[in-house]
Image (cartoon, rainbow, N blue to C red; front, side, top):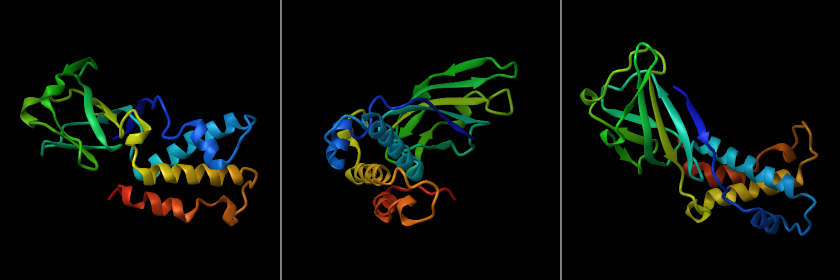
Length: 191
């Protein structure tokens, strides 16, 4: 079932000043472009790793509770369950106390544990359960692992240098292999 971003990160893992210093750009003419590249690079790293670099909130939708009492969720790292609701057959949502869940913040994917018999069953067959989570390494860029921040830096530099490359298939339009190597240990592959 899908996950929907509710609240994007308040800050990026790199500031505009840090990105400009990495690019050795001293003028303000490209500030908007560089800011967009920071966001794009963060999104790319997050998509490739299925992780949230900075704290953000997501809504997880499920049809029903897993029988084993373990709900695996992305993006990682899972920080906390913020709210949970079950929809009855009339579509009315009923809040569930978040204390009914045990959150494994170290697991990738994150695991929300619960007693299957203690939770109400959804009354609708599709998306009967909504769980709002906070995911990410934290609100400070210093909490983001350095290899992931370096991957963001390298993507920004690559895209900044090759912004006029268009749709050609030459080396300038490909993501550098070093970026893939930096994020490889953090990738959570779907089976």
